Image (cartoon, rainbow, N blue to C red):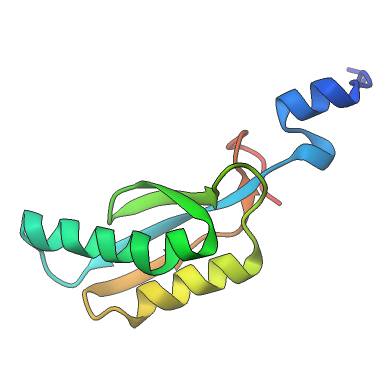
Length: 111
């Protein structure tokens, strides 16, 4: 099937080509189960410690979630490294996986 050219306006609306936005998945495993208050405190510390200061947003839980740039734009390799380093520095986590950058709008497309 031939690819039809799209106007700049439509590419922007669809977040394609030069308007593509990137983010990344994270997966973690706790060393031991936390009570609800401790889990909430750790999630708040994560958001306030590395997500908000870098202008990112996070959707998910402690076990898994997705990180992207707040207000549009793309997360960077430096953002990935900062998130990974923050999570790995915490004693509560047995394992941390920070996936590669991927298209924030279309899940099947990786960069």
